[in-house]
Length: 310
Image (cartoon, rainbow, N blue to C red; front, side, top):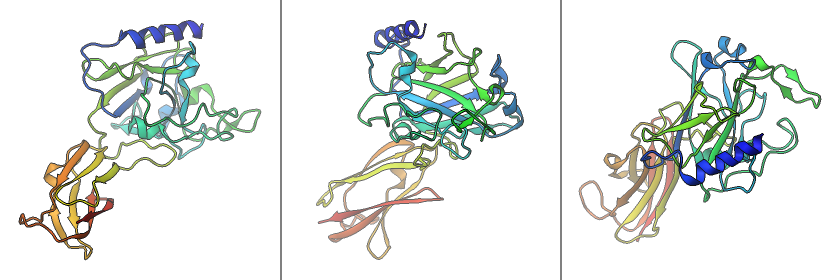
């Protein structure tokens, strides 16, 4: 039956059946789980008394000739039954009903987070996402922290009431990552390709502070992909970086003595930044040739790289 579902997925993805004058896709995806809406045997009974929830997911990041939903589980993030592992979600509100996670899709899935031997079985899909590829679909399930049981192979195992799956205890899917709805939401389905309301997914311009999900490399950095080009430069250089939180970090240029020579903070926005520096100080005077430090200060962390002015 899954092969039939997979054929339907292919039709939807390649004919644009999910498109509704879709907005531009951003790198940041927010997933929310409403545990009170989970029905069936896998109803997360244990999770209603805890504030620790993990999403275990796999990304299909390129076209596939397979017609099976299982082909979505290619780049896996999450180590089953291990506490303090990737996929930790944030509880929203004062009850244990809503949990959320937000991440940069490429960063999140570009590192293998399920090494063979740590998860059930011996395979971890086809490995990390190729950063140059395009995300297509996501498969996921949810769970509590460390599950106290072990399977026949001595690996952590969760009871049904410790898991969050669809009404038949099967996987949940976000399909059509490249075809969001007009309000930036994405379609979430159960294993029978019926709309699944206990999970919501939506593209956002940036993740709220403190909610950025981490892969195996603890990709909870609020600033990523910091680079400067050209360096050395003569008249102008470009500073590129991504801000993954809804805040405004401070961007400054300092000399080798640690003295600030320029402040470019007013140009920083949430999301991708490409900011030019013309090699002048805060008075508009061209700085001498030499080595300078580009620094991005988020308040709790400083990201930096060197730049050379000729």
